Amino acid sequence: MASNFTISEVIDSFGVNKFTWSIFFFLGMSMVFDGYDYMVVSYTMPQISAEWALSKVQTGSLSSWSLFGLIIGGALAGIISDKIGRRKTLIYSIAAYSLLSIPIYFVQSFEWFAFFRVLTGVGLGACIPVVTTMFSETTPTNRRALFITFGMAWMIVGWVLGGLIPTFVVPLYGWRLCYLIGGIPFLYAIFLHFKMRESAHWLANKGRKDDAVKVLQAIERIATGKVTDWDPNSLSVPLKSKVVGPKALFSKDYRLATAGIWLTYFCGCFIVYGINAWLPSLMLEKGLKLSSAYGLAIANNAAAVFANASTGIVAEIIGRRKNLICSYFIGGASIFIMAFVPSNFAAILTANIFMGFAINYAITAVQPLMAESYPTEFRNTGVSWCQAFGRLGGALAPMVAGLIMAMNLGPQMSFLFYIIPAIIGGLAAYFFVKKETKGKSIDQLAEKNTEVRLRSVCGEAD
Image 1 (cartoon, rainbow, N blue to C red):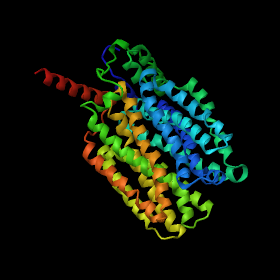
Image 2: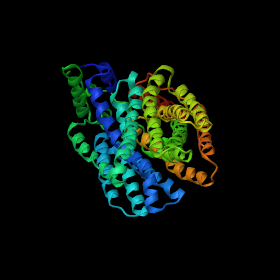
Image 3: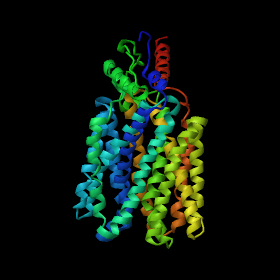
Image 4: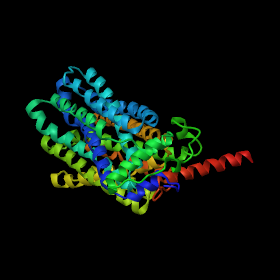
């Protein structure tokens, strides 16, 4: 083909096709396993706490140790993925979190449990941002937000499994077997080694245009059944930023976007991870039976699946910014309702489902902006560092909630506490998220940033 073309143009020309759905499945299953290995601790927390006679704060920290690992893994994976590729980083991260879950079956103390949960968290934290980045780089522009957010719904499916499996396994075999089951995803990492393709955007950005074209041809073969003789020399690639890596996130052109997505995601993680960690325990305090308490937590996460699917649809209609701002204030309202709901199961279930939908809708509304705010050369660094910072909030929340619960203020105050981060998240979205990315391809967004940098350089020269 003689005329110049971009990777986004080629991918967009195929629309949603068999390749898109295969990527949706490959990345989605990665998130299912990731979600299970993270969430299983919340549903084994009461048994672990009882076995080792843990305090409230120690019990809350059981959910936090993996989140500290997520922070480390996320921070490292972004830099690594931008250097060695999305595919390798994803495969290595799945292998890591699955294999490191197995030793927990044998641990006999709180300290060793914490140690291995941190290590497991490193792998979990590396997996999630790569999935977001891969979705952004392999799906058509007009469906990008939908696939990114719907992709996060797979993780919630894993969260649901993280509740269902312990519900049946723990009474029969104890809590330890749940972590042995967490080692199964290693087999999936082997499967991806043979089936997963590298991102064409990443290959082209690294100057490997021949390889990028081969990936595009493979996509075309799956999508249309034919292959075009694309000329690698005609492949247009946006100019690279001079500054890359973590430092680029705080440069003049990106610091406002970084502040917006970091703050909103921090608040979202604080709410979601804090509530998920303590919801079964809070429901037990309200007088519900263990099975009912677990059932509510599972229903909360099931509602999140629908939230993740719908937030991408709305973002494609009204735009990322409006969707994000509204979602945090609605999330705060849902928490308020949950705090004051009457103490009967039907009312609690209804309020709980609404809250699960609203708070997960809010945290997922941030996801498209993570990938769309940065160019290919440091996109996964941007996504992963944002997620790492957000999960710092998620790591702190269970312990802070444990301190509040230790004050014996009751379940109502324990819920009302989460309205504060909901308000902060909404305000951060309003004041810091200024750029609308709806309808713009990855290459167009990169070109726009290039134009801004060029104008900046010209201005300095003048």
